Length: 331
Image (tube, rainbow, N blue to C red; front, side, top):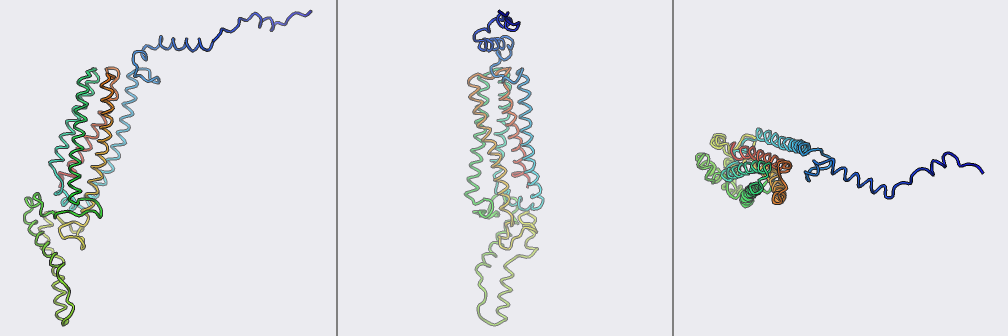
């Protein structure tokens, strides 16, 4: 009888594989991870693909700055478009600024500045694990943001009620020379504008001659032409007040209203509305941070979300710091 081969003998002598080898290997790996990675065990908010809380914070900080850079570029483009249009039609902005409420704009500026301060305090509270102060500052920030939106709602309501809408919907309820802000600053221009308004009314009421001699028809046409459009000397007070411009007089529009006045309110609603949309997003994020703060999730090793939200909020504040003077103050 032949002897078994060497391979057969080695197979018989080899020990059998341990039962449930895969399970033990997985358990050993799990226990080893906990035993050899105390950083993750001590920091439940540390993501698995980061080695330390500092590395996670630095990555998040880089991400938020890149996002804010895109926001800056976007609004910079809008500000450039604003500058170009304003340089081409300065009389439009002079005319339209009388319809804006500077006091409401200043109130919103103060509200956002206060909210930026409380947002910065919230970051410090999160770093020091001061839960009660953190919650308080977040609540104040949210309250300021809501106040901003309420004031903006009041402004928008007045604009809509007064017919100060963009495009073909632009139909002011009252002429600019009847506004107290305009009459106090340019009384002579207001007086001239009122006279020109009466001339326009006469023009509308004047009927062309239907019958009569040729001389009567010529005389009637001359009288009609005389009240259709004032002379350059008559326009001088309005030009001095910036109410009209040489490139903006629309024969179909009223003499004291720049032809492109409606475009200003298109710019106004678009830029302030876009900023308001960012404020609403900020309110939503701050509410989320408030829920996390009430659970005591933030501390010295985990305060990144508060820091990143505050950075976003500072940018929202900064954009308004530019919008307020550009739309409300620079005449």
